[in-house]
Amino acid sequence: EALLDRVSRLNDPTVAAGDFNSTRDMALHYRLRERLVDAFDSVGNGSGATVRMGGWIPIRVDFVYHTKDIETGQAQVLDVRCSDHQPIVTQLFVPNGVD
Image 1: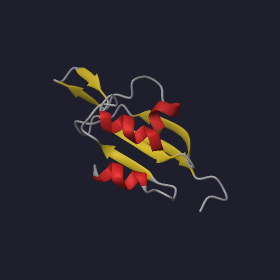
Image 2: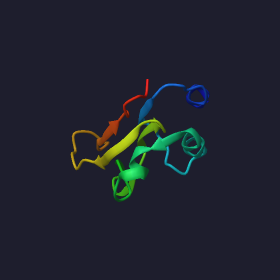
Image 3: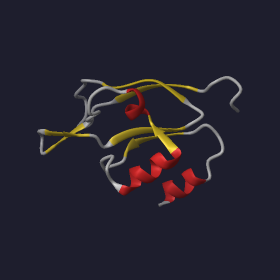
C-alpha cells in the first residue's frame, strides 16, 4: 500500500525496481500498471522468469516499472546463476525536455 500511495503522487520520471515476491497477476501489479509501465512487458521476450519455484517452475517475481515519460530500450533476463534470482537488465531513456 505504501508503494501504491507513492506511485499515485508521482510527478517526476521515476523507476521502481526489485524483487516484489509476487507474480504479475497479483492485484498489486494490476494497480501498478495503471500508472507505470512494466519494462519487460513492453519490450522483453519470453516469460521474463527470474526464479524457479520448487527448483523447477519458472516464475517472474522481479520487475522494473517506470513512469510513462520514460522509454524502454530493451529488457532481458540474463542467464546467470549467482543468486536464486536471475538479473534483469533494462535500458531506459528519459527523452529530452523531461525534467
